[in-house]
Length: 150
Image 1 (cartoon, rainbow, N blue to C red):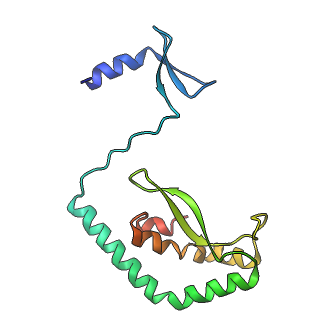
Image 2 (image 1 turned 90 degrees about the horizontal axis):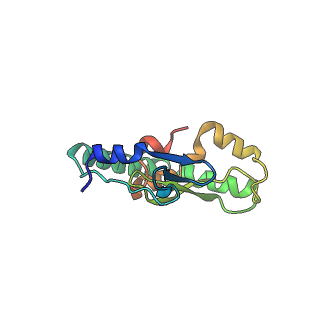
Image 3 (image 1 turned 135 degrees about the vertical axis):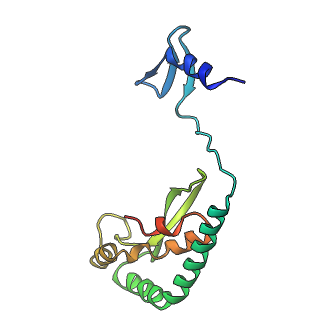
């Protein structure tokens, strides 16, 4: 098993080739690391603080979803009346464990995505477009603070 010092020494003779996303060992001209390969993500063990944060986020998201359900339904109706297409859209995201997930949000653009609708501008300005992300908090993909971050 390599130590941190031996790894550091091995990488000192390497250079990043800007034409290709790889690290090249200058002494042997061999590819050392292909930067296109997926980066391994280390998942820390679940600590008491992390468990408490997850319980708090789940509980708060569940309460917020119940409280905002009438607003949620009105926004779905308003988005459907002001433009064509689905009211809730998905976009790709990466969670803290490095896994891909679909991040939810109200659609703020036209059906072809060419421009923002007038109601979509209102949703973006008030951050109500991010309200469906509470489902991502319930699923464990996002933390509550990340759901409404700009």
